Image (cartoon, rainbow, N blue to C red):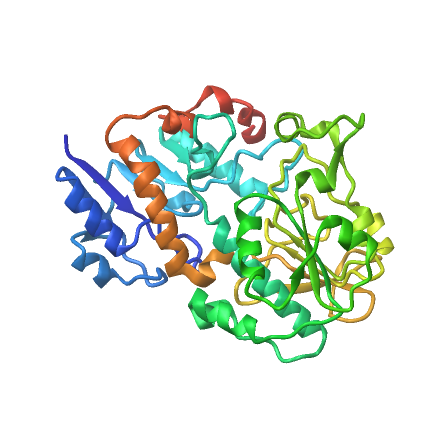
Length: 410
């Protein structure tokens, strides 16, 4: 049976990523003789149309012949084609009464309308975020998290230079190379800087990977709390370091994932001497916030927050909006929590919600490799269950694990 895949152009003009690179398209067409790939033209994509044409794909504005349509982020509501199967990051699974404002910088109302239209048009929606292994540990096969961690860490350190009145480093998208990013940060010296990095997932590992190329020393949680440092240091707090059970039970990551509402934050003791907080942890709407708006005044030394996860009204209360690649920073007054000009008594915020787009070619290549290895064979051939579990809507109907979204869309 023949199969036609399509790569749609991204809705957001500042997102230049793609689910498949031209080389990956060429590989797939060679591997699957019954496969046809149509690419919607795009001026913003990190690879040009000519590259895809040379790889053997068809460049065409009308992609309605495709059985399966691949994107990266949310597809424009106006462009949705009835009765098709779509794969993209829909950012809808967190949409419940605890988080009506939405996540990833897009208002919840837009996601509501997106879901409604998907259902109305009889579409099947498979969300990349939900494609996980069957071992029970919830490992995600797909994600741009590593590059989000890398670029987010770089941007936050660059914000520190801005606040200190020093010359800022070139932006990641200007360098357009991870190797150049590593080279330039390696030549930068820092002192009297204390940084907390939260998380132990894909994003945090990307940040940790980048920190290895800086002149900033990693210290343990105990060392961070108990010793005075004149050099620049950072501490990676894993989940058990910053949350604890209300009943002081022994920490279990599995239990925290299943029952996040039974835990509270214990990060305050670390933030009393911290200058910079980089949030790289995954957040569930039922999880505790790291701290409240009222507690911010207690952190006298905290000047910068880089919220890589960028959940609006999420675990970081200062993330009142997302920012763009063009304008990545803003500042808020710690008393009013309103956005103000940079100055005294303010917190500088980095909250770009599409960080991997700054290194679009490299992040797309990594994503596409995972898509080819861990997803497409189970769509083209036989599903082992991973695709079914990731399907939010099947032919216009919410699947059983996601029926809770009825409350959201209604």
